[in-house]
Amino acid sequence: MLKLLAIEDHALVREGLLQILGKLAPGVVCVGAQDAEEALRLLESGGGAEFDLCLLDLMLPGLNGMACLGVLRKRYPAMPVVVISALDDPATVARVMRAGASGFVSKSSPGAEMLAALRQVLAGEVYLPARLRDAATMQRGRRGRLSLEERYLLSAAQMRVLEPLIQGRTNRQIAELLGLSEGTVKIHVSAILKALNVANRSQALLAVSQHK
Image (cartoon, rainbow, N blue to C red; front, side, top):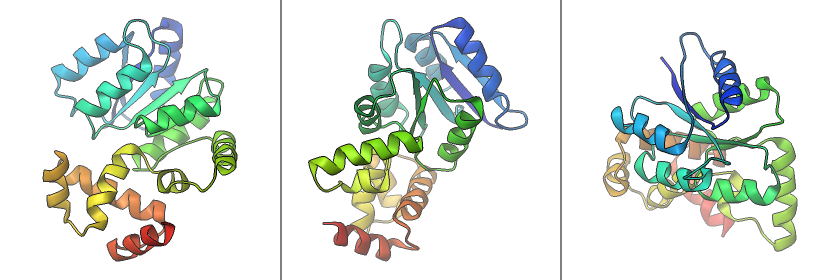
């Protein structure tokens, strides 16, 4: 059973989000929090492991969305975070993704697009709307060659796993090194191989070496 956490300070918007999230899958459990502090209390009470995904608004009172994202990535690295915001310019989106978000959805997006984004992230992938992805690519293209992270849309968590992966470490060794569960590492490795469009670790090493 999926359990999702939506952090949004406006009550009407939060209720609307929860209604949309309820359509994600049969039996999905959706929990709302009005600010970062309430969300962190909910996560701490259950150890964080009970939530499969967090939907985070950037414009929060008190601890803002960017600061909250940093806390979530540090305390609950296995839980994907999708940011939702009315601030959807390429610079904001790039900042959010560099901070470790697994996806970004504009508040102007229809509910169907949000659900598609969450399904993609729950499958271990990274989501960006085509409009924002193309704009970011053009902006980065003017600066020069794309980084590995930018080219393959790898999240910060996946980049952390990629380095020891191409060094030849096993899933267990990576888990011990990064303080993650072996199951979480396995999910990240599968997502990395898919993003690089390769079938195994040797091909991943080749793809990374060719990018340099």
